[in-house]
Amino acid sequence: MTATRHQLLDLLADRILGQRVGHPIRVGIDGHSAAGKTTLADDLAGVLRARTERPVIRVMIDQFKRHVDLRTRYPTGSPESYYFEMFDVDAIRDELLIPLGPGGNRRYRMEIMDFSGRTPMDSAVQEAPDDAILVADGGFLQKPALSPHWDLCVYLHIDVAEVLRRGTIRDQAWMDSAEAAAERYRTYYIPGEQLYLAEIKPAERADIVIDNRNFEAPQILRDLPGDH
Image (cartoon, rainbow, N blue to C red; front, top):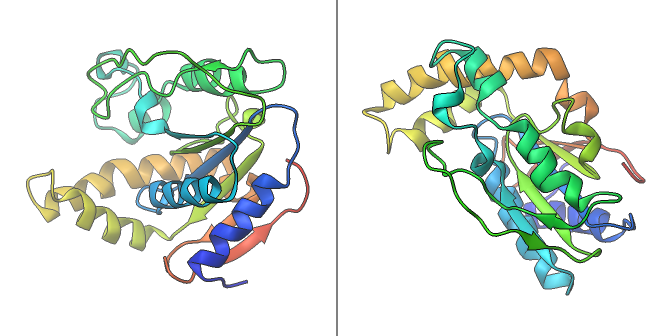
């Protein structure tokens, strides 16, 4: 099913607002680098805020990175370091997802680290009401420690060639050149994410799968009705 971007956002908002889980609903936007996760999550949060008075909590999982000095198991710059060590999975689960889930105390944190992974962020603990909506985006959201704690998981698909193209355009601004950015994707991001695809098969596990190669006309590849 091909939809306009507006139709897609309405569909996602309908699914979220239609669920009654007895605790804050936890929505994860998963997918490749440069798949459009952050843009979709930002837009979705905006649509939700326009349609409901329920609090919408917008979190970027990139702010739950493990400090670079603690990534010591694999060589720096290796795909394995990216996949296995980049994110503090325990903190994502224990500081964000479990508190908002069944039996949780509703006291959560929105970040623990800056985007560089070098400066801890002492974000205040916040408390969510039971009807809050969490919209989080990030990579590797369906790792085994995290997968049970999403109430709705959306996976954005783009092919590897598109990851390389978009990622190079986006990241050359903060790297030395477009070629340096492309090399980073070829040797680090893409092979690290292929480890995730091989181990987890996230597109098979997600509730909703979207082909996001065309931002304005995304294709809904699968939508599983009902609760997660």
